[in-house]
Image 1: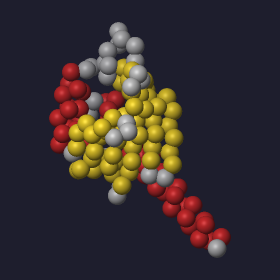
Image 2: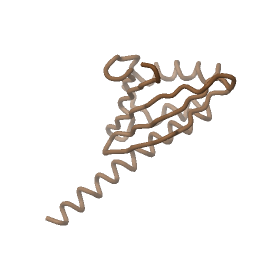
Image 3: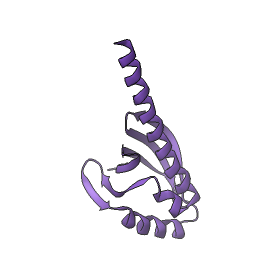
Image 4: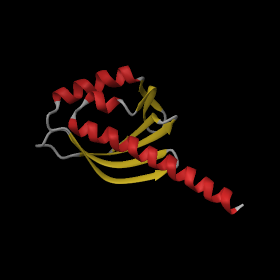
Length: 129
């Protein structure tokens, strides 16, 4: 019985490690404004929502277009990770996003759901929503 509990705990830790790695990979690429690296951690059919359930868009192709344009238009773009929590296949990041240096950063929460080794769903909560 103790072995099964240990095995289950080890599997949980592996899932959490992968989930955190995927979230960090996309954050690093976001800050580098590297669209190719940014979309790699995402599933082909990724769904992006305003929390709790308003679908914003679906698919890596759509994400590529939206973020590619944003990266090319915002040289000051930077996301500062304020706090991160990981539980199972879910990563929750508290962020401060600078779009233009002369403007205060936007506060946001991003929730990443991992499935089959990729980010499958993203939920955003922005300050004031």
